[in-house]
Image: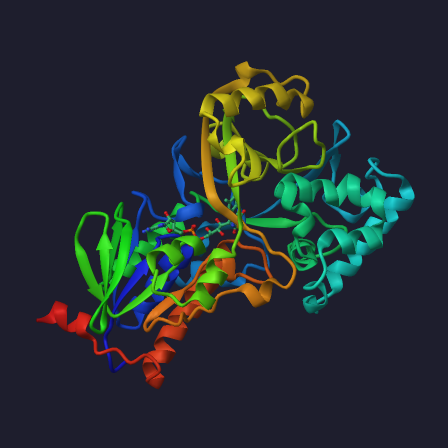
Length: 454
Ligand SMILES: Cc1cc2nc3c(=O)[nH]c(=O)nc-3n(C[C@H](O)[C@H](O)[C@H](O)COP(=O)(O)OP(=O)(O)OC[C@H]3O[C@@H](n4cnc5c(N)ncnc54)[C@H](O)[C@@H]3O)c2cc1C
């Protein structure tokens, strides 16, 4: 490497940490800012029952090659396990197992003829690789046509409504195709249960290792320090930290949600800002219950019943055994909502009280005295909504501003956002920066670098 730049990374989630690790590995001086006191963003975990657990339920699919490669590279592959998972579907007041092709044929919420259609369409989607044909049509239009109105409304339409609310009808078919396609990749045969990956000890094991690797390479990781503003000064960018300090850098990689990037860089040209501001995210509110009894035997329960007003119930201890958590059961009650939804503003006790009313629908024996502890977590930019012709709206990693790059979840496409793709974002943006330095496309006077060495 001929030039050593000072590179600022905004955001200490998986994308920011990966980008910082790659850039520091190539000899650049890296500074990473994370507004929260804890690193890891949406994938972070908190100490619980002698180990740690994610604020939001997390697993990996077998197709998650980028994150698995990173885990191996960082020497923590012994912590990654692949465990069988049980999937279910809650509809018409009961749980239907939905872990295999045979389960689809037993999905009594629709007549047998509809189940066959769902099975055939699933099989078809699992084998389509050319996703471009699904970019210009909504999931609702396409699925209604191929499985029929009744099967759509009771099964897939119900799940889309549970995740996207009033925006369900806008979701592109390409997003839905990916969901079906990926789940197949985590199964060796149609009749076998899928296996999902988990990092024993939580995703914090990866997050902490990444932060250490950045520091070992001379980088600085500042947790609890946000970026409040960014200004241009000569050939450098000056980052105003929440501590009040101003830090000059040559290059910036921003991994925060798109609307925030538009705010941090008001000088961005309109054509790029429109793309940033056009991204709409669903928020997620997750109630985590610690109980002394099992709620059901399903790990991942999709919900397609308006009487149970949640997106999913994820019983983590039906995936990673309760024995790993001192025999306690850990259950996430998850609800995705639009950012203006009143549920997002409920107090923790209100979120809990609502769940206590509804959970007997999943298991009539459930009662509030099973609950030993509970937590409520909220994420506003949980899920970018992928609409038709989304590809044309994705902002480039290279922004029109010199030395400013973007790598965030809104750029993940056609796959759905996830930790694997945030690793890929970090890899891709670090390669871009290094290529631009090598080819002279990124012409910085390295004033920020001189500022530190003088
Ligand atoms: C409910 C839920 C369940 C999920 N389940 C899974 C799963 O099972 N498997 C999976 O792979 N993925 C899952 N994901 C998705 C996955 O966690 C995310 O896609 C991924 O972690 C995003 O990483 P990121 O670095 O791109 O963004 P983020 O994690 O959002 O990181 C951005 C960071 O920027 C910080 N930040 C914001 N503003 C500033 C500022 N001004 N200055 C400094 N820092 C700032 C934020 O605090 C945050 O830490 C789930 C997400 C949710 C919400």
